[in-house]
Amino acid sequence: GDSVTQMEGPVTLSEEAFLTINCTYTATGYPSLFWYVQYPGEGLQLLLKATKADDKGSNKGFEATYRKETTSFHLEKGSVQVSDSAVYFCALIGYSSASKIIFGSGTRLSIRP
Amino acid sequence: DSGVTQTPKHLITATGQRVTLRCSPRSGDLSVYWYQQSLDQGLQFLIQYYNGEERAKGNILERFSAQQFPDLHSELNLSSLELGDSALYFCASSGGAGAYNEQFFGPGTRLTVL
Image (cartoon, rainbow over all chains, first blue to last red; front, side, top):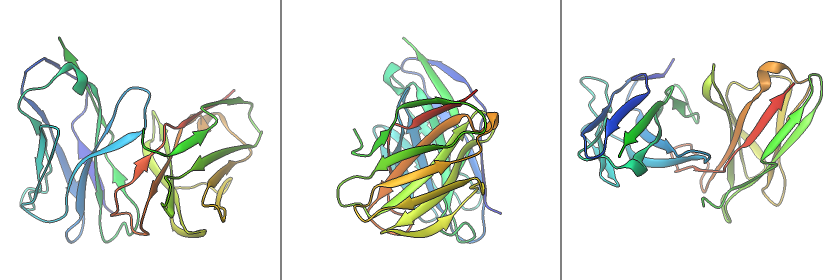
């Protein structure tokens, strides 16, 4: 079945550092890919998405490119801020998962001032 | 604020008991999704309702059931509770039937089973 694998956390960076959170997926066909963010004490929020190969999703300085050849959707940000501290979830919806969204295990990000 | 409300915020109960979690979707949204977030299982999709009808089912136990009412609010019923049911339960809503539509999450209900 469909699955998502993302890098284990926690990830701790200094403010203004470059961020990469790796995400790879297994799915038949061409799934839609998502990054969600969960700030402390809150529900998840959609951060960005991409629905076809080579699409780049972007929002709030974060970017991720749908790479079919490497089955990856890595999340990047050029300069992180303390306010980016949160848990980040990579997710997919694919043909075999029908209406179900499959989440990765989440990566906790902490940014030091 | 996503516009999705969930009550109660916290719930503490004992094994073997039954509880009901409530979710009100964003105004105009017809789909409601339920998720369970636990340390060992991660974030798992449980079930989706669209305009009162069950639309998709995930890893929902037989002890759990849900429904969506004519006013579109939804309830998740958990019965014969076990220690392992302790988790954060999220509700999300979206405008359309397909999961490809952006889902807006509520703040969650934290369930503790003692």
